[in-house]
Length: 123
Image (cartoon, rainbow, N blue to C red; front, side, top):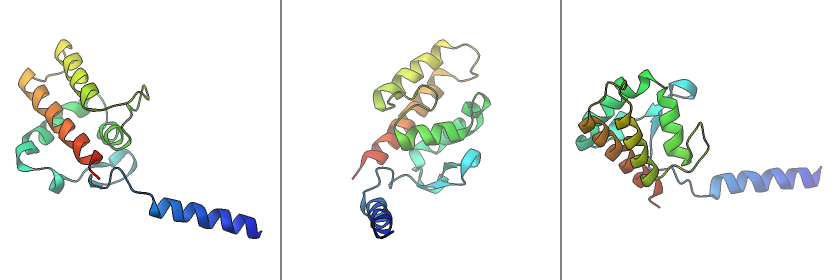
């Protein structure tokens, strides 16, 4: 029993003391309704944030985007998702003809995603 309590105490200490890589990214909601906190998005990315909320969520939920940014892994493929992969995703979206997104909108949303990735990686 004493060993069990020691293990639990160590796990709690590690979970509290370990730095969070996503501490700069604020979210609201939980589960399928999780979203980036709109107040943390700078003015220069607000329009892209609105586009993402309206158009990107026609194919998948916002939770997929948020979790991908927070974990650094694509939610479907489990592959790493960083600035380079975000740009590659934008290129794939441009090639898709049924997204309803203009090239400029895709470019701006990708820039916002890259900003979010940078924010997540700040220590």
